[in-house]
Image 1 (cartoon, rainbow, N blue to C red):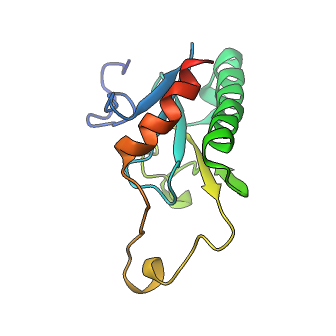
Image 2: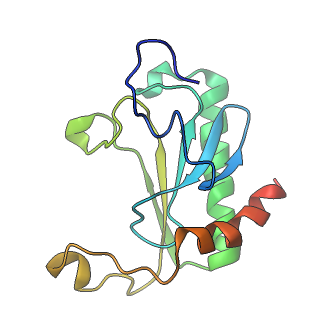
Length: 143
């Protein structure tokens, strides 16, 4: 899906299919390899684009609709108390992949932070990505 001359090594252009949960017409849902919380999803366009203005109207609609569907899938299966959603556009804004925009969908539970990220630079998660994928994938299959 990458165009000639684009950055080699974009994990969103060549995602690990084991972590892809859903593919819509213009975007896909993938589990974050380094999640902030269990169920941390990313929704990204199939096309390698780094700015919102580069998306077509259809891609923008698919991005937002799929993000909303992802929230409902995680809400149904994992019952979080809330969500953080957002994009980091540009390297100075924290984008780890500045050339391929994506939306983070992070489920949140009251009291879900502890001392580990602060003192140990480590996040403790209650299950593996494979376990999370097995829980969420059937819900996406119904979309």
